[in-house]
Each structure stands twice: as structure tokens, then as C-alpha cells.
Image (cartoon, rainbow, N blue to C red; front, top):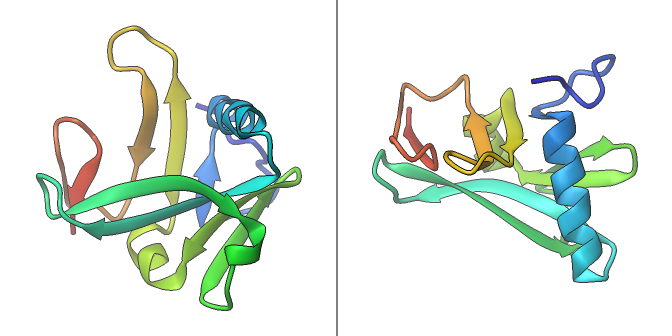
Length: 118
């Protein structure tokens, strides 16, 4: 797993594979969108990760924005308390593929890797 840009520390890290995948998904949307990452209550371990594309006009003063060569990742400040240092990776493996979250703040994680507890 390699970081997209190693010279700059960011609150949410993206591997090169994850960056390629989100840019590919963004292109399929046909719009210049940013990726919102956050958490919500629920899931097997208490909190679950959420990701979705949204218009840059939806970014507010309550958000932190991380730039990856022109592609923006947005996270609200409350979610960032639980996600700071998160590494988002992507694998196209037939078994276990998709986005993977490595969260240094999680004290427990679900077997599916999509939820966590602190």
C-alpha cells in the first residue's frame, strides 16, 4: 500500500489504487465531484463508514478538505475525530476486493471491514 502523495501529511490517506478507483468512478458520473467520507451510527461494531460523491458546492465551513492532485476528499469535523489517520485502499481481487479502511482509531472492527468501534 503506497500513499498517493507521501510528502504531505493528510487527515485521510489514499493509496494510489484507491485514488485511481475514485477518479475512475468520478469520471463515470460525468461531473466534477468530490468524495465525502464520514461515519454514522450503526453497523456490527457501532459505527459504519460512509462514502459518496457530491458537488463541491456542498462543502461547508464544518468540513475539512484534502486535495489529491486536484481530486478533493471532504470530511466533516465530527467524523474526522474518528477517522483522522485513516488509510483508504482499494483492491480489485475477486475475493475480498473493494475499498478497505485501515483506521488507527478503531479499537474493534467488523469482519466485513465496513464498521468499527472506538
